[in-house]
Amino acid sequence: MDIRQLRYFQTIIEEKQITKAAQVLHLAQPALSLQLKQLEEELGVTLIIREGKQWQVTEAGRILYERSSQLLQSLDSIKGEIAEIRKGITGTVTVGTSAICVSHLAPHLTQFHKEFPKV
Image 1 (cartoon, rainbow, N blue to C red):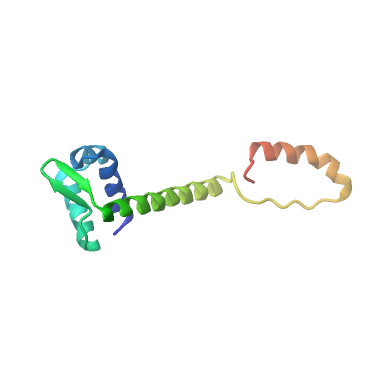
Image 2: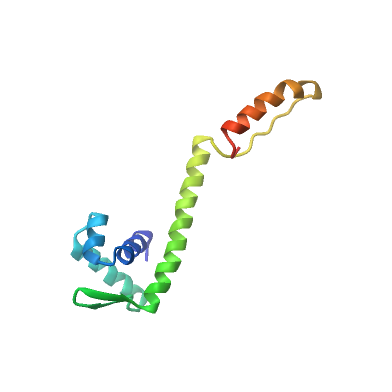
């Protein structure tokens, strides 16, 4: 199981149709169906019960959807935090100064904090 498969599975559930999910993901429908089948084989459970064009999410599928949603949101959050660090808009700045300079430095630090509230 990999992140890509979890994103595919999440899209299938959200779109309520494999064909529609394939369009959203810019994949061929058979390729997406194969990914779903491989995921089910790896986990050893049926995630979606297919009956013609109708399908129903199993209990295992519901749990996988909930957990994968949490995991994918965490991964997106991590990517966002790392991007903020890379861009220099988050982190810690340590400034050493004498008491005499504090009054001159304070307005600049206030402005800096307004521009970069995560630093």
